[in-house]
Length: 70
Image (tube, rainbow, N blue to C red; front, side, top):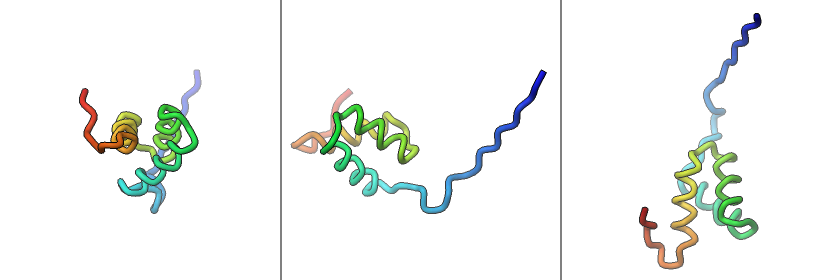
C-alpha cells in the first residue's frame, strides 16, 4: 500500500506571541465574540494550548482580576 511522509518545520521567526500580545488579541476577540469563540480564535491564531488561553480569558474577563479556581 502507500506511504506518506509529513515534514513539519519550526514556527516562522516572529510567529511567537508573548503574553501581552495574547492578552491584546483576547481583549479584541472578547469584545466581538463569546468567550468560547474568542478562545478558539486566539488559540488557533497563536498556536498556544486552548486551556492556557481559556484561563487567561477568564482572568481578563473577571472584573476583580482574581484567579479562577478549579
